[in-house]
Amino acid sequence: MNLPSQPTKGHGTAVRTRELVQTALMGAILLVSQIALAALPNIEVVSLLLILYTLAISPKQALVSAYLFALLEGLVYGFGMWWIMYLYVWPALVLITWLLKKNRSVWLWAFVSAIFGLSFGALCSIPYFVSGGIGAGIAWWISGIPYDITHCVSNGIIMLVLFRPLLHFFTTLQSKLGHS
Image (cartoon, rainbow, N blue to C red; front, side, top):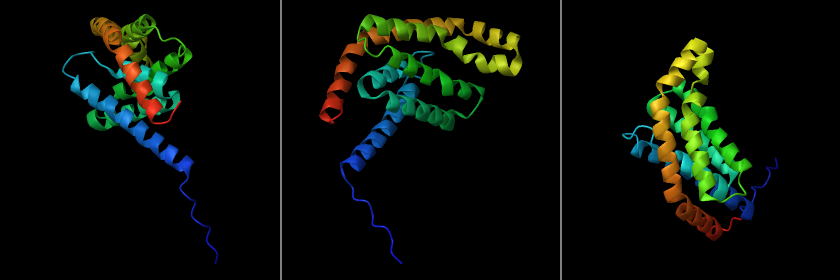
């Protein structure tokens, strides 16, 4: 009986392995950063990191890391109704970033990040509209508006302060790893 020979580990396998490890690390960094700032309501760097991952690393890897982040969040905090929203909210940010990827203006990204923070509650109310009706969705959204305002302001400030240095860092890192 002839068994097929084992594939050799060429350049392609090494690149795929590096991409897999890098994507897993990106998802883990999202989780750790969220947990580190959990005591500060609606102040997070996940938005910043997903935008940077999309612009400097890869939209595909950013998307996978967003789903990995959602999975890890579910494992840490439990899979409740809130978890469903993470399956579309964070990937939506990656998609928006991908659509605007040619622009490197810190002001545009601060605006995008701030508007994302402001609209977070509205986006997250969708499961409540589906499960509890229009009244439940609206009530859930309205009750979170003060948090959305905090999310908006903090996302904008964080982006203004950290976007340029971290974009430079991630771009340089990717260049040293041999990615375009």
